[in-house]
Image (cartoon, rainbow, N blue to C red; front, side, top):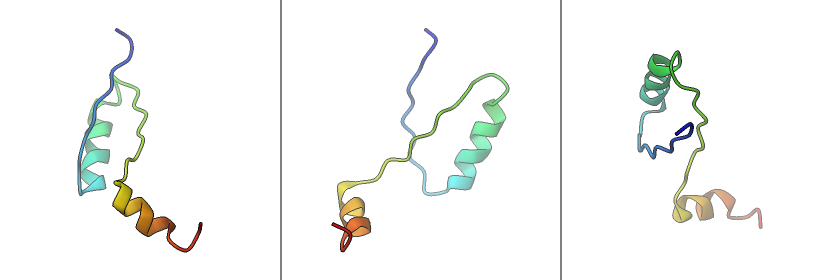
Length: 48
């Protein structure tokens, strides 16, 4: 029970950062951004 995964969706990264700060004294967070396939294709177009 030392690890937990939480999937959070937010359009406002500042709100997410504030939430993390509120809990930082109790929990160590590792944040991994996730993007849709459509967003990744758009971001990588012309680079492959």
